[in-house]
Length: 188
Image (tube, rainbow, N blue to C red):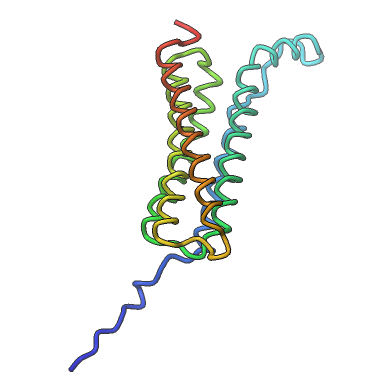
């Protein structure tokens, strides 16, 4: 009688490798956003007034960069706080992580769009839709990890429930903003 042995390739994803990938994608996404900030061309290179006016003209791009850099930072911190409490990564959690990485990598595009077209209805829908997609992914990660018992046993069930409910509320707030900007845009 032949015993079936488990393949060496059937092992779970390395938690540390996924962490490195996550950190790398976030570092690249956060760096890419600064590329949209262009040094202005000046007629008089010594004119502080002309430089100030040119920089002020691009103020919305700077605002979008700062807002989006902090948003990506928040995404990374939220993920990190959950990730350190996972004891392992299941295939379901891996799929959700891939989704989160895709959303994070897309975020520089959203930042550039917001900097160029801040009052555009579609711009705001894409921006808030992307934020929602990330938070919803985190919400799904919490649910999957809870159901599959992937959290460290030291983490109390009530803390997981609080976290899950907080992200559910965040998803509702972001979805409300998305709907609001869908019907009541700043610009025409």
